[in-house]
Length: 358
Image (cartoon, rainbow, N blue to C red):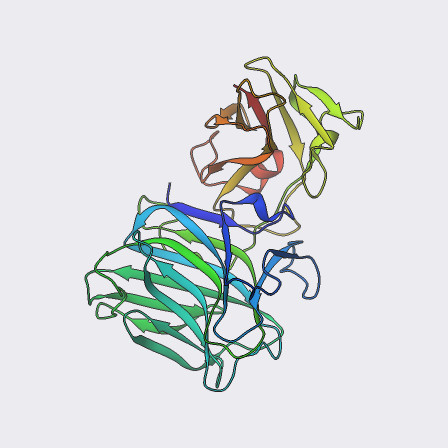
């Protein structure tokens, strides 16, 4: 697998992904805030996340682990910059941050307050996007290629709305420390601004360069949530909570909750459900995540495995131990398990998703 992160908060819940939300004490402004309007999230998505601060020098951000240290990654994120975000003419607002495995700053991407140019920093400023700037009150796609080759050597590429605006190959000082890796990525506001500052983020994806797929530039894209909308080929669990009259109806709500659910204490039983189709048009699907929301009904122990049905193939993902409080579990599929090839729109539209009790 080479896709490390895919997150768009389309569950409408900040707890959907393993993200730590961090803020300077007493200085957080709209941090931990899901956005469904003002601004409108990137179509066809329904949600984005707002992060910001209310005082100069304060920080509020989300830290996302990569699952292990990396020396080369590709990042894609949708960014919305509200008008008058609090950047002074002399300040810079850091909105993408790279940390090494020792927890120290490795580098970052900043927005210039005087000209709204993008600026890349490692041990010092690597380069600026110059005349290519990020405008207010609209969504932009920012992509970053970050390679650490040595303590003073590396590659830094930054793309804004599809065009490459920073390109330093080989001699970019992308390592601010002697720990030559990136272990976490941060998105948010990292001090230095004057007054109230905020960013809205959506459709985050991160690739490393291993393997033969999802191993390079990600390009613009959207993360969509396909809700259950009918029965699938497996209906073995029983309904709990408010009864919708059908198993798939227990798990089809917009924002997941435990007011309606399906359940079983029998190992091996499973439910899978038909799903909504992809939005209209032709989509290049580079990753599918099967996501479930579940908990134990008692403290005796138990596991759930995300499960999909594609064509003649039923693929049961890794079984996850459940606590007594609800959590999200997920299984990533970069390839269609029925063909071992890239997903087609038809295969996604015909797919079923659910869980197996373990």
